[in-house]
Length: 285
Image (cartoon, rainbow, N blue to C red):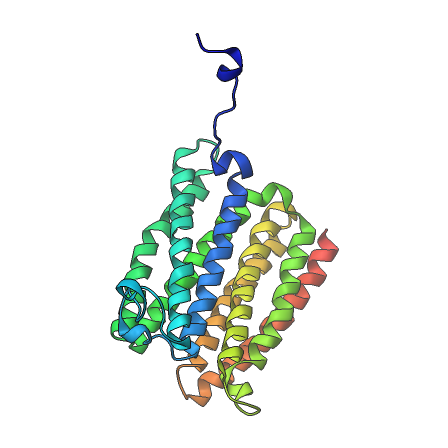
């Protein structure tokens, strides 16, 4: 006859039960961010065609699964982290789909991210086997789209804990990031030094910060500030920020002085818009 102690023994709980879905989603966002920045490092160091252009294998160790040199390590480590990010994306989507407590909007966002993940994997494979600028661009923007989807989903699951100060914080993050985005952009940094891998890592890091600020500020502001005009302003600033990010990306791919001038002008206006948003938010709250 089974003992009462055995029947009362707690069963193993899932990670969702232990840490909660918001933490799972936040962790997935961190992995997605790390994957993007490691991809930038691989591209900036010219490691995209390392591993002897093998995929998913590399160029050393059993079955050529390990890197043989430093360039191969950059590419291999990018793939290694991307694998865990992919598992986290799938896990987040499955957990949201199966949980009745997760907002349906969140479920739709993370499931879309899961659908885009194999497309991103195929694009990553194509960057190794072909490495054309068009494929590289699609690979980057698909990654940014997945990043944006998970930022939106993360804000939705944490929205009850976010308030006006988080709107101000997001706008401040954007205001701080824009000057660095310009400073480390090809039209500016090449007048001082080379557009090195470290410089590219920093610029793309602040690029993701600008994108995050453009999403968080209007989403939280619409819910917490209860000011339609200010909400519209924050939304417009967010859209404008995406335009600046797009132009900033173009400056690294073209040698068109008109694109460079347009980027620098719009970046300056975006900085002013972020600062004005901080002032308006503080007044409204």
